[in-house]
Image 1 (cartoon, each protein chain N blue to C red):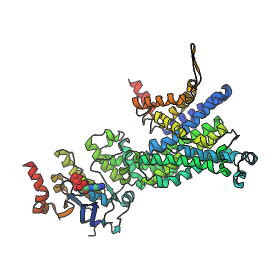
Image 2: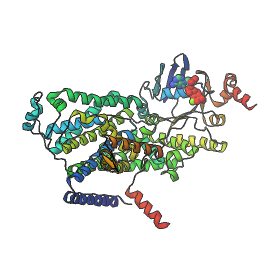
Image 3: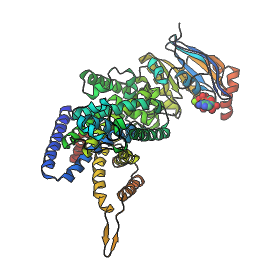
Image 4: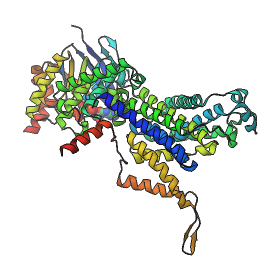
Length: 259
Length: 346
Ligand SMILES: Nc1ncnc2c1ncn2[C@@H]1O[C@H](COP(=O)(O)OP(=O)(O)OP(=O)(O)O)[C@@H](O)[C@H]1O
Ligand SMILES: [Mg+2]
């Protein structure tokens, strides 16, 4: 099967520091893929290169065979890639509903002056957007807080709202940066179900960064492991779990911490 | 609350406003009417700056520059060719300047368009700058406009400026334009485009990740704000009937900024209330500039004193109520209805 997203030897240098070196990945449509590694391994940097926030020092990103390297973030989003952030970035003054509506802007057909001048098709589009936004809030279980200020929501709800907002951009490829951060085991369990559910419901391909090994091993079909910017291993969860290099670099570190 | 209820209530509100204006025109003296005119123009200016700064988060200090452009364009268009032939004493005007003539509406509109076009041109490089730099750069822009106005005598009549500009800007025009600005700005802010303005203000990085073309929307908001600043400048030129480059010093921007901050960054209602209040208070404060007699001691009047008093007031507002009068809250019919319902229940 052809890859939906392909990273070709992506490299990111910050001065003397090589944050990511020659990261290559081919992600099949519909897959849920994990990206793991110790703190500072370069995972978020990979996301930033794929989503256009950083221009890779070297290498390419392909979406459905099209080279999207160097496109600005908004164009990458328009091409069909959406993301969430490690440290939640919502539009704090807006309501939950408004946050989702902003996500729909990229697919909006009418121009700014049309709805200002009560142009009927533009008003109808706004009504449709509202309905759709409520559906998305429903999908993440936030219907009851649609009118609440985003910054006043509890942490878990904010994480889910960020996902709903990303879904509003109608992506084909979704990048989740540590979606389970700060969740208790019960919540992480639900999150795994939820990630599978949205993959099916929205026919997505998902790449996620996660420190919670239960989540990663439970939900991902394929895993890439970074250490100091270098891809030290990749493969299905079972193979990763027993890979000595990974155990040394990452799991070993955790095992030590728990010892 | 149904949409047509809101529409009807707004319609009634406009009717009440019109009735008040009729009364004002019949019963108030010239001085009070002048203040009412200034109220309208200041509200319009505050709304335009609030759109740029309060709603889109671009710290722009270039308002005086946009107002100057609007004022000059409007003045040149409403002054008759004969008047212009007499006004240009230093050097004769270019023929196309002298012969240009248009009705007042067109002239004000053209002033707004010219300001918006200029905003698009300067915004192109400037809006890529970070916040603090944007403030400094736009401040510089406004200063450049003033210097240019001083130095192209064949267009602007140099330092002498224009006198005897036709005084078309009566209550009806000023409140009409003010209302137009209010309705358009509120409509835009309530649309998804306006939501994106606020998104850019709240978190630019997230907005970009969500597919918002941040630069384009910033340029749009900046140009729209500049349009209404130009309109305000045009109305002011006709209201005061004289303009010259010295009128468009930084103080002018500061006055508008003060209204916006006092009303609340990101509140249309706040700009309307503060626009009216600040204008009236500033006029009322003129007494502190007159000589004061306390018993046998007579304090001489100090020009500029009211600005000192006013700045102190502004500092007090910022110290004790950082978010201004309204913060980002608004008063709307829906809000009032909800409040009444709650009161009835209680
Ligand atoms: N804009 C930047 N400028 C300079 N260095 C950077 C920049 N962004 C990231 N780095 C560096 O690159 C390295 C990788 O950072 P990155 O954020 O990708 O790690 P990560 O794998 O996401 O870690 P974590 O699990 O803590 O989120 C770190 O050493 C970081 O300091
Ligand atoms: Mg990270």
